[in-house]
Image (cartoon, rainbow, N blue to C red; front, side):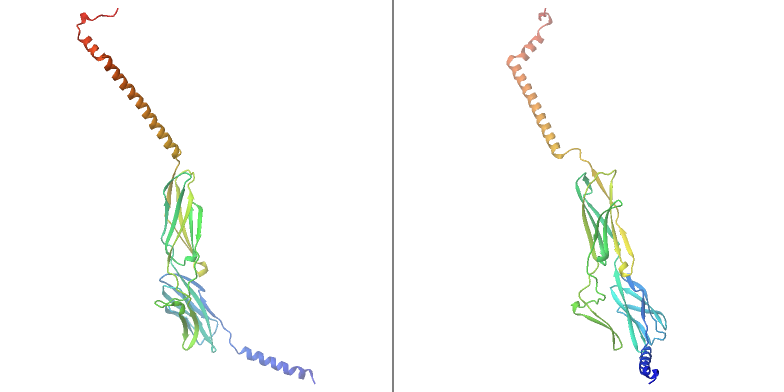
Length: 313
């Protein structure tokens, strides 16, 4: 048997396998941006595209309000508006009877717009403690927030908040939420299933407190609070907001309070003692003069004519 006869059958099988495999179309589905952080009630544009040259169909599935802005055979651009809750967008394309999807998670955030700092008390003695309190109203997501207490440019305290990640979809007026499953459909075809595990938290107030000791400085102490919302892992930026500075007045006490009390008591007692001695002396002199008649003799002496007064030798 010739060498061609020995290798003919395996070669034919390999050729058949290669040819059958090459008939399957390979393509990809893309979404841009890949991550998206949006302020509440905001709007963003989203692009869905594919590497398939002639896709049969394509689109974007979402529970949010969407509007097709522009399209070409291999891409579509949508405007997603009134984004008030976290959501997941599904881009899909069909090519040669095969459908592929690509998802995009949208994270809704509330920036730290109102940051307030409070000192209690605002005037303290040197070496005594005081409390610094910082509050931020209606911020979301809380787990991306860091509060920093500052004395001038010096960092006194950092507080990072920890919380559960929000669910990708939310539906209003459904209870219990953990029993709900949402299914995205294209016709009768299931594109995506989402089962909820619990209610997503609303924007919350964040607060941190720190107890510090009044130190000797050249002038008044300025304190402030910086709120930093880090959205880089969600496709956003770092958002910072700083409170109005608060001034702490520090005074140095003249002396110890117990010493002041002791000195005051001793001074009062000494004053009473001296006063009582003077009163006793005055009263005793008055009584002695009344017994000896000094006042009557002196008066008679003054009434005598000058010629009868005996002049001392």
